[in-house]
Image (cartoon, rainbow, N blue to C red; front, side, top):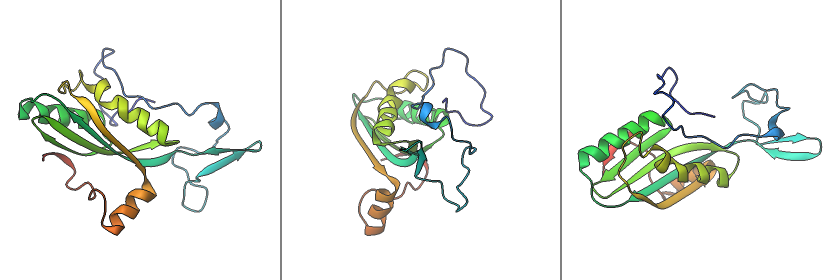
Length: 168
């Protein structure tokens, strides 16, 4: 699956696209349209087929931290803004001359899939967004219920407001 903003112009074949793990053959029998509910207004968490239970994709809150040698703030901001344009699911990015934090929601079957996509994000967009050559130094992936529980209890990061790219 290639993720692009609807209506965005293609940048040519030289661009590397961020991809998600394909659903695979276990989803072949699903006749619901994307986003279609099961009649209750909720997307089903599991789907039973031929005696086996298959998990439906869930939302995961991702916080990716990167760090490295200092880079000019204007270049860091421009790179993060381009990343937000290339990856329209980003909620917020915070940055300093030597580190940045990116927060967004990822749809994936399980934590492993969400983490795999998150770990590829910086590297796959490093050239196209002209991001600094920093390394990933932290990754947190939590499910939606855990995220909302933390917020309700007053723990964890505050909801991603304001949305966008901002200095620390």
